[in-house]
Image (cartoon, rainbow, N blue to C red; front, side):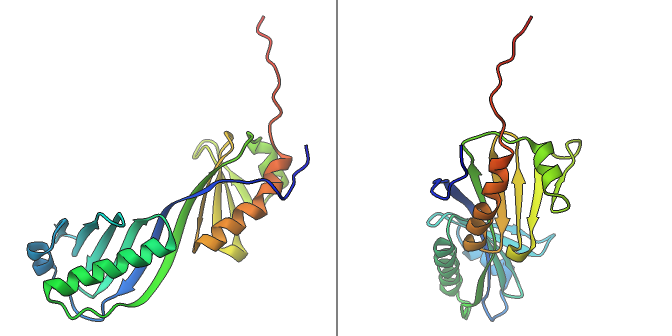
Length: 191
């Protein structure tokens, strides 16, 4: 079986983390009292606000910095951030949506084969590290893409990177290396 370029892998984005600024001070107590779907956390100095569509959770600080998690695409992250800014404007803050950026993307992918982790790690040192006593996956860091791939023996991989493009490129880059270390199915005879 050859590692061909026409293998269609389903990369599922499970979380997009983004940040933006409101360019105004936010009174957390006011947001807690007048906002909807809000959890006030005064001990850590923030408010959590949830949106249903798109399904995101925002951590809001009084400085005007807001971190949004839970989106499943970069477009959804931006839409959610804009909707959140609108919610804050409706409460009465002079919010100006600025400095939006996606800071992290988490994706998962299932390969159609299992992987020999020890062999993969040996072939790809020092980029790959495997410590089975600590974690069941091999950690493979791709510096130029700023992406990290967690590889499990089952063929499941988890990819984190700064954006969706780097996550997709990481899978493209690592697939041939994983293909070389796939487990061949051997029959075990029990005596």
